[in-house]
Image (cartoon, rainbow, N blue to C red; front, side, top):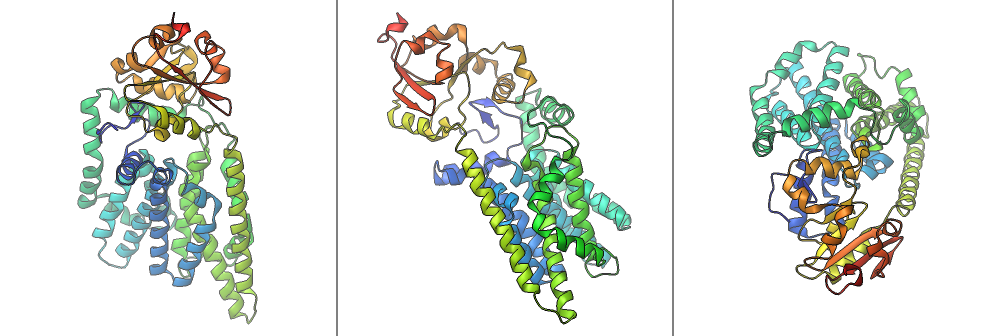
Length: 470
């Protein structure tokens, strides 16, 4: 809409909660394919594809085709992976980049250990780390580095760490990806570094005032639920000595267990927890499930027993059924969420050039998308409320973004006290509000809405033709 490919925006305001990769992919897709919902999910699909492809290719090369193919099948029917790959937020994109980074780093270690040429592979690892940073910030760098360090220490391979860290080509690639955007933002907005790194990384991780508060055991319980069909084979593989250094591919299993544990422990520390945060741990756990099933099957074949394939098929079927059930439950729950699509489509059909859109008591995130609005909307609310900064919600996001452009804030953030002058002057107005919110504004009560849907309504006000404007 704006033509500015440097600065992510929220309702026209600079939006620095997260880096721009997700928005670049989405905006480029919308530019090429048009305003379609599947394009909005494209970045998540890409993230899942990158992560799954990285693990599949590595397992196929380092281990065997059977384990790689079973991993691929299990990844496709794993509920959290399946859902994350279609949910339009940043979690699966950064999970895919973290996964590719760790796979390439581990592959570099194995090449180093065997005297192979590792420099190009390591440079690719740094490149995906840079993309991970651009996807969701410092966790794209910190989590792969932390997991790799723990794996090297646990497997007594720390001697390779200096060569991994002192990669001139790798650092050049990473900095070339990351620094231009950071530098451009700091040049445009002098407070950018403090807000982006201090507020959105360190303070956000440490504070407890955000939404989605859960106990420390939230993620372990979630993973037990979604990996329950694989609990027995996983336990059997551990008891059978699959982590014994003498066993083939034990180093890969150690990596996957440590990788998953680091992610789980890291995100279990803050009190605020979202399901999507755990996605970087899912693909290594899926690999361990596939590996355990293959080991079990081969052990039964070696012992002259049958039933291994049937058992594996049953486990896959149970996982697929769990995946379908989770998808249906999610769809059922989403049906209870405020549906803004009809509001947007109504506006798209009736909006005329020069008309203005105003929202009351909330920001309808999806309406500008479905209505293809050419400009930001005006939002009417109590912007002086001191409780605004206490919760992680739409209002805090809007006010934080507006701080970087005070002139735009004066234009698009309207105090409730200025409602009549804002509505009753200038161009015709389309007003969007919940019917409960409308009760607070006599102006909205004096005129019938032109469209209503699920407790939400749209009013059309033409200054000079509306009795409430006097």
